[in-house]
Length: 467
Image (cartoon, rainbow, N blue to C red; front, side, top):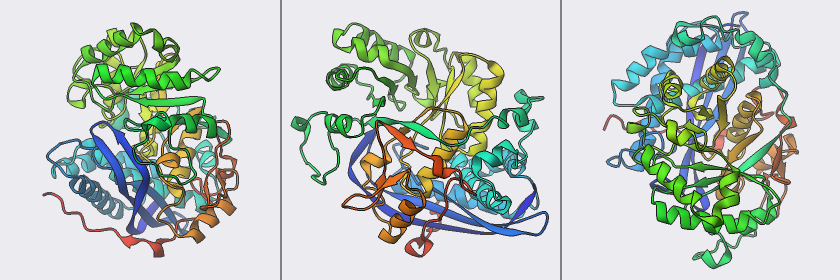
């Protein structure tokens, strides 16, 4: 079904973390949530609204140390502005066509202003998601049902020449209904393992230490951050293992966040883990290693020796649309799905995994998705990809709907009682035995019966970029 963009709006609001979250070279204590709203008109003349939300995350899309967090946020705002202008000028097209037909022109426009392809993907992702939300609502279809019907018009396209002849309709016809997902709990680099590690307790009644997370949420899946300092990483992993080994069984992933210079450094970490008896069970639990090598080097050398130990995926290096193709030629077998990189990007990479066959896979990773529209759209995408677990960190590092009106939080709780629960401090993500129940996301639109209150936000600041 074709449609055109009639109206676009950008908003934002600030949030504070309940405890610091460190990954890679940054410790996050607060942030900004971006929200976009669109009005579209379909080919029959019907009009409708859609929305999308995502964090303006600093030091992930562009890790140039010369840029401040504010600079990074302005980069993302500018990508949104460029994608917005392109969308408004595009005329009628399918949802997938809006993305694919304008891909090269859009990326080139971003590059002309010093915005890398990963930053560019953010700007396009939000408008595509909001527009598809509107289209689904006009059709009265949930995200999963809309994909099964190929409402977005996904098809072979010159921008994905490697998938020429691939039958997207057949792939999409088997998209599952949302049911439940395992939450893969993130253990950040400064997270306390036991109460003895706490230097500044939050004391808000919620889990703070790894031990408390284990007994409260009881995850089966874990994501463990490593820093690039092998001795420190091994020592910390031993302390983590002393807690996780209390479980009858568990699964984990290692996330390097580009902290290693090359494949040799990551292999050295793995060999050190093999030599440490206290890591026997933890090492056996590792499903894959996520983007350990700096993106400037990651797609320049073979990782065959590392991949022989464990599968390796790209995350930050999944910038240009053909990045997974290059990664495959070097020995990578997986790629992350993040809603901030775009729903069509995820589905294209899913098609590649299906075409390439056994051994190639996708993983679902987080960008501190906040309670409400943001986390629900991300969970809808993860479910549609047929994945069984997804990294979650927002439920732990952010206090529920912190920064949002309590009326909004309660409205989400009422609309999605399987996903949220009441607590003395207000609604929060509901997790039992490490599972998220998401059946209520099968509602018209992309995973949400309601929208966030834009009256409780600020109009998005004009991007101060280029600097």
